[in-house]
Image 1 (cartoon, rainbow, N blue to C red):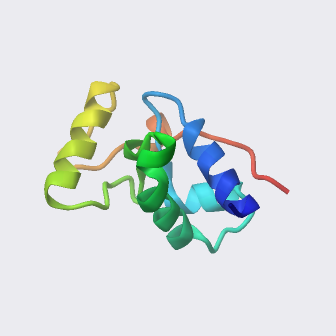
Image 2 (image 1 turned 180 degrees about the vertical axis):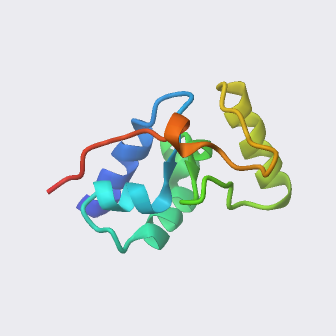
Length: 104
């Protein structure tokens, strides 16, 4: 496994219950601000294997990127952790975004 992949996995594992991070934020913290799509691929391909809290990763607008059943599942899981959604289905990132220092 590449070092960058392991860093992404570690960051996602450390998002606490009731908090979220965006794909781009995770990429920045991992040291590669242009790797948001790579974060998405890692999350998609390794969530089950590494038991990652995939539902805590959203887009930079505070929205769930999945559609259909995936959207409903992710929203339900986040709500179970106490995260509230605006009427517009957005999450208030000033309240729920987990902050981590960027890797250098």
